[in-house]
Image 1 (cartoon, rainbow, N blue to C red):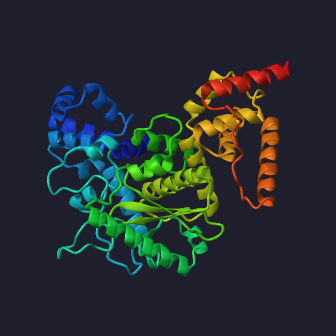
Image 2 (cartoon, helix red, strand yellow):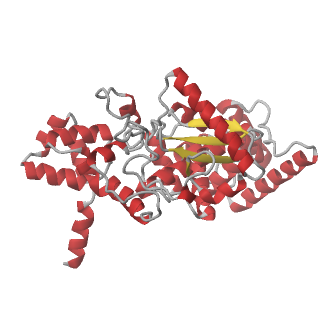
Image 3 (tube, rainbow, N blue to C red):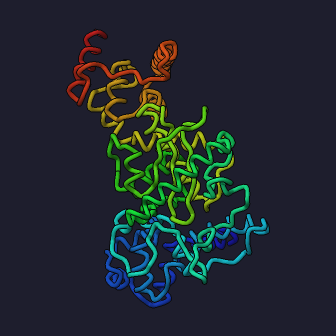
Amino acid sequence: MKTERMTENAEAKTVGARIRAQRQKKGKKQATLAQEAGISAAQLCHLEKNDVQPSIKTLGRIADALGTTVAELLEGNARSAMQNAQSETEGDGTGGGDALSSDALDRVQCGMGNTQDARTARPEGSPHPGQCTVRNAQGAKTARPEGSPHRSAEDVEPVTGLWRVHDARDTAVDRRVRARLRREVEAWKRIEKKAGVAGSAMLPLFFPAAAERGALLAREVRTAGGLGTAAAVDPVAFLEGKGFRVLVTKLPAGLDSWSLWDPDDGTAFVFLREAATPERKRFRAAFELGHLARFISGGFRPLRDIGASRKASRAFAAAFLLPEEAVREAAHGLAIGPEDWTWELVLALKARFGTSAETFLYRIEELGMVSRSRNRVFRKLLEEHYARCRAAGKKDLEPPAPRNAGGRLGALKIRAASSERAE
């Protein structure tokens, strides 16, 4: 009996359970509510069973049909995540512990709708689905989005005034670098203002159930961003297309990337090392996207454990750049088994996906697509290549793809040649 009550309490906190409870309270059948909300009965059935998560747009139509608000339907998910984060930081001297109002909650759902919703028309004067900007009674911008977690002084980056995403890495950035980055941030905002461009993100990154599972989180973000399992995605272009601000700049030694959250505009600044190779920039952009997704899914609390965060965001980046279906399909199309990989095939396929050899090797090992013995050989070859680069004063240049390895035909020729040698 106790177990049943616990299960019922847990289910009551889900969006689907709240929709079902409201529908039953109103005495409506699924087919009736689905028609009124402009969705299919099958889709509503899946929503109520929590097989899928509704977008904010869909949730808004359902709320209207039920005569309630989006905030009430979200209360067991988004509101609790925000309030939990808020309660943990109450008493830090930065403000009161006011609960979220329904209006405030609607305005702080940073990127919780889908990509199509972000582009659709909305009532004049309503907040952008990805925008967290709010104003106080006097009309001035508040120091943080209303209803979002309070920031203690240590959670706010002292020079730029933006929110820390991962404070354990920030010690690598000295005050002089922070001052330069602040000037770059201010210049970017001035240009946006002159161009009349709204600086808000249009990508949902609130996936609390997948926050600490890198590959699953990458799948959620890819789906939300409309990428599916498409290969060869440039995460820098992807981030910029979704309203994030990517700056390629000089960063201190030991720091390849950095990100900060802008609470006024509901988006982030992602800084990438200027001297990094194109492949490295793509990886670090995906790496920071993983940090941001975990930061938002955790209620806007800075990530603390640098070791665990690096592991989770590395797994996210590899899965985002190399979706499992695409990698397996590429290997299957060339009849490559765990013992069939050659160094030339590794270089040809990593070039096809636009990743570094290191990332590609990490991913196929993670997926169990290459034997450990062959992977050890490839890693040794990669280390020898990097050693030669450093000896020549060319730090960590990527090993080039074999000549004429472009496209599937080039990879087939390499595969055929390796088969002949094996015979």
